Amino acid sequence: MKTVNDLRHELEVVTKLATDAGALLMASRASGLEIRYKGVDDPVTQADIAADT
Image 1 (cartoon, rainbow, N blue to C red):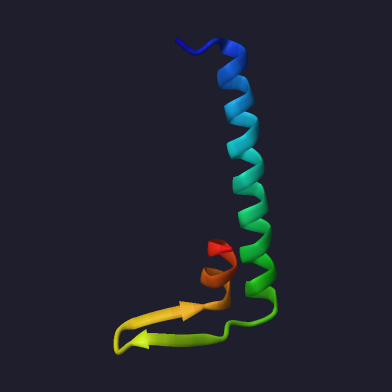
Image 2: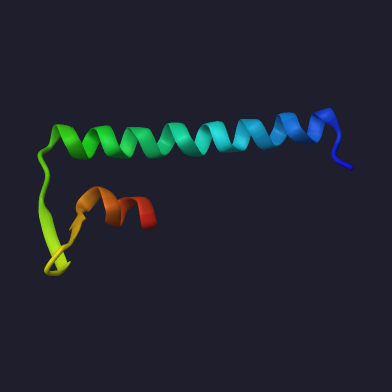
């Protein structure tokens, strides 16, 4: 069973990940979107690529 301290640490980790991901998305939005397509209806933006790395 996880302790309160374990859960607190996990919350800190996921909060940092979400904050960092949000910063990447906001930076991408501010610089304009470059959209590529993998297929006919399958767009991929630089933000998508950055989120996967």
